[in-house]
Each structure stands twice: as structure tokens, then as C-alpha cells.
Length: 377
Image 1: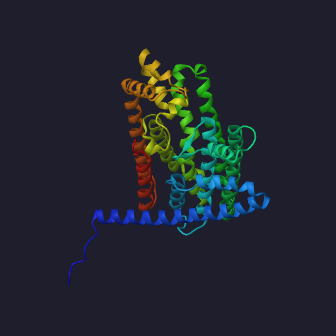
Image 2: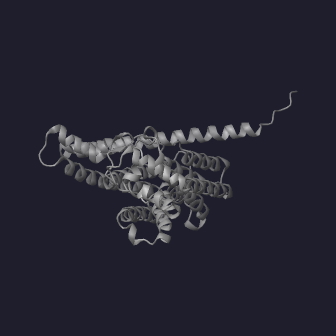
Image 3: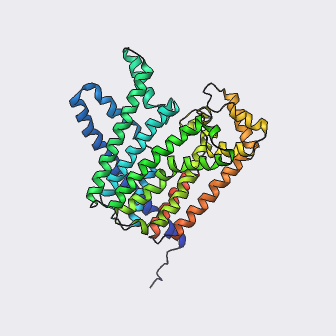
């Protein structure tokens, strides 16, 4: 009689990865289906009011299509970490709501930053500006584009609340999940304001406070809503309490901060073919990121001047951007923030390993972490 074979560690790892892939694929298909149905319903509502209103729905639908859906995935695995069932519609509805919140944030962010592109496509305000020009309408195309984008972003926010509300109802209206969703939205708006405040009022912030302010901006504008809140909301919807998910929030915040610092690095050094935005866009927009704060903290006078010359200057040339990039590298700032990403990644890994969750859940969190921080320039 043959001796039964014992699965090797590599076999077990491969099985876990296959399970993660299968669950994630099924879940994301569910999110896509939920959004497609939603957009179909809202198109009928819009067209029932006026044919011109269909463009609002289409702009949101186009920007909400594709992408890695990191927030949705984190919500799902937060749900699974708390014992949530794999076939429940609750995390699908909640994730669809988060995706629409993300869409709204992107639309408004592009208006604020005067960004012409998003994901290698015209940003929503530019899309509506181009529509105005192509139709030869009256008055100012740019004003129409910005005004329309504000309304379209607000519409996406409204739909986000509606979809998340459906998930709350299906979950039995857990109060802490509702409070978490509300807190997330408040934090993002405050973080966004601090971001634009830093661009115009940098002189009001003492130099020793500049780095702390930059960390606060990345934390509240992005890191918490990109990672911490999605994980926590998934677990809260599945019946956990805030007291039970402190470890979830801790690891996910480290993941979110590592993700955002990596994004800030890409905003300066990223390849437009990879990022979907012009090279050095964050410099031209005047973003006071952690990278910039570190640079100005340690730069020589010439190195600092090379960067401040381009900060917030949309007319900066490719040569100006290259000089600024070289100055940031020479000051040691790039190396320091890369080290910060490594430290935060290590903290997130340790936090995941300390969670009392199924191996497949821990492995899924590790996989999302790896994808978030190891993006190519």
C-alpha cells in the first residue's frame, strides 16, 4: 500500500494563494456587477429627467471602471477576518460604496489640483470642458467643466452613501460601522483641506512642524481611507466591535501610509506610462508631501532652491523637473522616504502576523501589502 504523501510547505502556500485568487476574483466580479447595475438604474433616472443628464452618470461610470480596487479588497478581507461569509452581498454593496467614494475624491482632487489627466484619460472637468468645445456651446468651456465636475463628484458622494447604507441595513445597522464610515468621510475632507492649505500657507508652518504636517496630510487625506477604514469597516459590518479590531486598524494604517508615501515618490519620479499622469506633476501642483518636507529639512541652499523654483509652477519645464529630482536625491530625502516605506511595510507585516485570523486572510493581507508598496516607477 503506498505511503500517503504529506503536502509540502510550498504546496500549502500555493493552495492559499489559489484560494485568495479565487475568492478575490469572485468578490470583485460581484462589485463590478453591483456597480454596473447601479449605473444602469441611475442612467434611467437621469435620462428620465433630461437626455443631457446621461453624461453625468457616464463620467462616473467611466472613472469607476478598472483599477486594482485595493480598498474593496481590504474591506472584503476585513469582513472575512471577522468570520463574514464568502457569498454575502454585504461586503459587495459596501465595497461598491467605497469605490464611488474614491471616484468622488478623484474628481474633486483633479479640480483642486488642476489636473488635466487621470488614468491616462482626460480628468472629469476636462472631459466636460471638451464636450462644451466640441458642441460649440455658449460661455466659458473651462468654467462649465469645473462646475460640472463639482456636481458630478457630489453625485458620486451621494451614491456612495446610498450603497453603503444598503450594506448597513443588510448587516442589521451596526452603529460602529456607520460611525466609521462617517468618520472616514470627515477625515478625508479635512485632510484634503490641509493639503491645499499647505500649498499656499507653507510659511505659516514652522520648519520643525513641516514634516509632521506632511504626515498628517498623507494620513488623513489618503492612508486612513485607503487602508485603515476599509479593513475596519469590513470587520465592523461582520459584527466585530472597535475594541476587537485595534490590531486591524494598526496594521492597516501602516499599510496605508506606506502606500501613500510610495504614491508621493511616484508623483515626482514616476513614469507617465505607469502613473497615467505627467512626469513630476506633484511638483508642478505644489504638493507639500513627506518627500518635499524631508528634502527642505536636509537640503543645502542650492538644493532647496532647485525644488522651490518648481513647486506650484505649472510652467516648469522638463529640465526644471529633472533638476529638482536630482536635488531631492542629492539631499538624501529620497533615500530617507524609501527607508520610511520599508519601516512601515515591516510594521504592517508584523501587525498582520499578530492577528488571530485564518491563514488565508493573513496571506491575503500580505499580498495586498506587497502590491501596494512595490509599484514600479
